[in-house]
Image 1 (cartoon, rainbow, N blue to C red):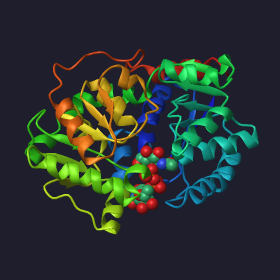
Image 2: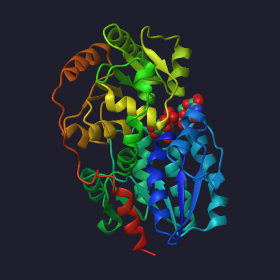
Image 3: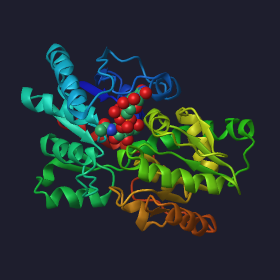
Image 4: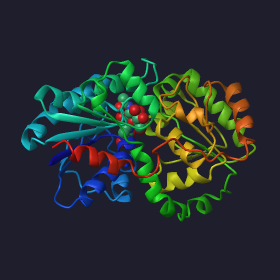
Length: 359
Ligand code: UD1
């Protein structure tokens, strides 16, 4: 069976890597083609993940780069169509909710090529997020929907999706985490940065709602600056956020800004953090698996299971709200040890089983 995998942006790599591996282990059963749209292109946002996750070179790179949503989505569609026609795979697998996910799914639908969506069914119910349209529309188009959690199944059924298209397989990103945690734990990054286990706050921020307007970004940075006076605040900074800080003339003294980290260093930093402050989707899940308290600077989340299990809290992007939430979460002990069903490191195997059975 000929399978084409699509990657485009940083959060895609750790979801596709275990699928590539699981299919490779079924010797002879799959011919695999990897397409990188080039939505992310810096070494630290893309290449390092290929190295650390042991992914093969892409067969095709579309080099679409950055741009407005219409430019980026349109460029992926235009560049992907001839590639799809050339390879004619039996299935195309798209993951997550980035612009490349929807763009490639749409090209498949128009050409009658079967498409499977991994991480289907997640909903923030917030249509001001670009990802929410990518999720909703990709799930309408895809022939097969692989869900990470039971709330995702419920969302899809509520939208009238045929239950036969839905397969609850668990979380593929956790497959990568389970596999690489021992290697990540042995990294010297904490010592290199002079950090004590559970003695620092780890921060990531890149959502347009937090960084594209000076108001929320100023509030968040003011809170981080205040927190940095009493404990290390480590902030691997996304290029989008760095650019906005420069543009708005904002700073946060005392905060330790780092370049975007690779998968292994970032996992090591997450595992040992006293607290994580983020607006990422995947990090809400990783902290849940690792039982690390997480504050998500958003009004909503498409990953409610992380809130229900008590490792993740939604916090407004306001200085006072952040400071108060940090003090509450910092003292939260002992950590729980619950984990959502099927976040067990075996999700990619379930996906391969399901696809194998379809021909
Ligand atoms: C994208 C995804 C988002 C995901 C995030 C992870 C969409 C709509 N958004 O947002 O869902 O959570 O990736 O990072 O698909 N840039 C670089 N180097 C790079 C990539 C980007 O410098 O390798 C800069 C560019 O200035 C670019 C900006 O970052 O304009 C934003 O990148 P973009 O891909 O548009 O969106 P993200 O914010 O990364």
